[in-house]
Image 1: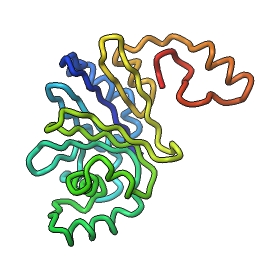
Image 2: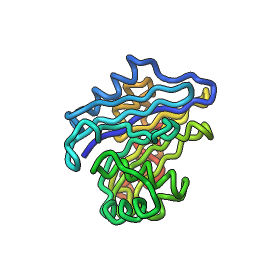
Image 3: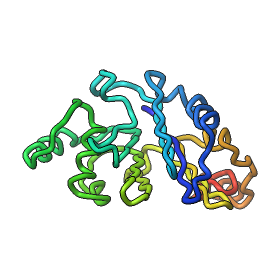
Length: 200
């Protein structure tokens, strides 16, 4: 299953190491095999890993490019990762693991931010491109794998696989009464709303 979390702040106001660890602990049930955290100047990425494909420590997340400029965490399963891996190997890319997350790293290197259009699977993916100082967040087309966002008044963006990780990072648990009303009328909350104000 796995869980991802993190933050992006152009002003460098990222959550503290303690807050990032607390975010990880709040969703540890999603991936108890390994906690990995990248903490940079403008971006922090974390993953709680449930080891399924390539059980080795080398497949732990975050996964990075050889030059350390591309950092990726993901939750999910890429159904066509073997085919993508073969295509990337034929183009000259070398692999150090047998996991599907490294395939995402090489795919981003080869095809850029639109690499996601080649994926068949269920996923939530965070890619930090240190060269561009940009964070890309992706979710599968049907939203099978969850991805919750909070944009703070200071411009800081928080994301996580579960809302509780956002609350751990300091997001106020203020009910979204409009969303609750829609739930009572429709029996679901239309996207991008959630039950909490400021969480999409």
